[in-house]
Image (cartoon, rainbow, N blue to C red; front, side, top):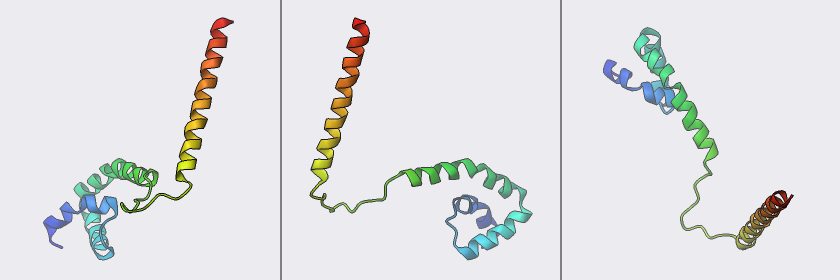
Length: 99
């Protein structure tokens, strides 16, 4: 890895996408380069946000996957439960206003 390439690898190192050999070489460079050390720490919040997004995002589903046989029943059950809770809220609001 040439000297200029080491400076460009800051983002890749912070995100953890460098292979093991390149990461090792970059860590050696990092000990001698305060500019890169500062940039790695600046990437910290962005790295954390991307990891949180990755954990919160569902795993990709194959585009040709077919829904299971009980999917419709589950979806209809969820819609019915939401409507019931919405009706209860309206009834409670009407009762509160009447009181």
